[in-house]
Length: 284
Ligand SMILES: Cc1cc2nc3c(=O)[nH]c(=O)nc-3n(C[C@H](O)[C@H](O)[C@H](O)COP(=O)(O)OP(=O)(O)OC[C@H]3O[C@@H](n4cnc5c(N)ncnc54)[C@H](O)[C@@H]3O)c2cc1C
Image 1: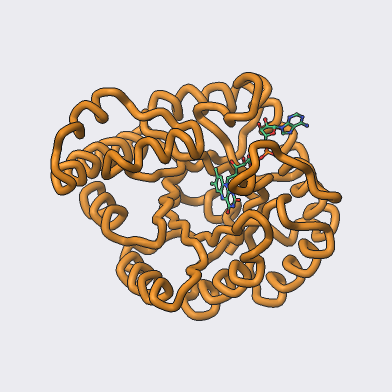
Image 2: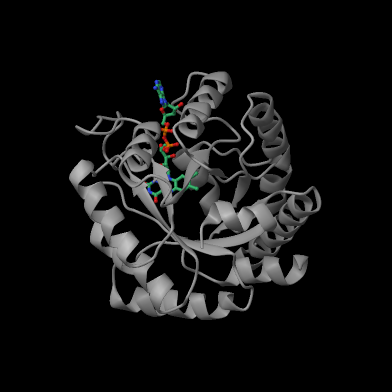
């Protein structure tokens, strides 16, 4: 089912998975799917690795989510690693498998490089949205990324919101945000998005911070800031205690978002069920 249709009627809980590289990791993902199934997600999504190396795998897992598990599923597409021919072939394959949803992204800059070099057909996510709309019409519901703390490469929040508006004007029909740890950023962002005249649903991206070693990684990876009180609470604690502190924080964060009427919670599961399951158990 199209995510744009789902979000008309209800608020969503959704899970993001990545295509496993090894057979052992496939088992972990199967177990995660099994455990999280009971929370009846409105949809699931499958990431697309930068550099094009996982195009086939992403397609394969997207189809499996649909065919083997009967989920409403969304495949991530990126400009990086894809030209028009790759997109044409992937959209055709999704149509044949009755997959209705695409998340259109610029893509992460490949490891080892600092600057983004556009591919020949698509420079920004807005180009990808335009192309998919032009070639497939209204067949797919298309989502795009939003950044409550601003995309790290954007000069200002105003520029970043202008970019979001371009993506929506090209035909995106929902937004999923980058992870954030302080709901203040989300509410503030939502306010700016609405003031810019963007009225499509905004789903909150959630990735709980359950150990200190993740903190540096998150900040480097996507610019999300970690609240100082949370960091201070975790310092000098055992891994087990860090997990409990992080989980408790995430439950309050998600509970707060849900109570405030957030249109959806999208969990970056990293193919694990434990933390996501605990949060859902405690807030629903
Ligand atoms: C929910 C979610 C899922 C994700 N899944 C994946 C995934 O599966 N694979 C992956 O590789 N990455 C993924 N990412 C990460 C994403 O690819 C990166 O954050 C990437 O750096 C930006 O992607 P974007 O689609 O937001 O880019 P864009 O919207 O193209 O923006 C990129 C930057 O360019 C600027 N910009 C855009 N248009 C213009 C313009 N015309 N002129 C000047 N500046 C402009 C923007 O302000 C921004 O700073 C995901 C992110 C989110 C939030």
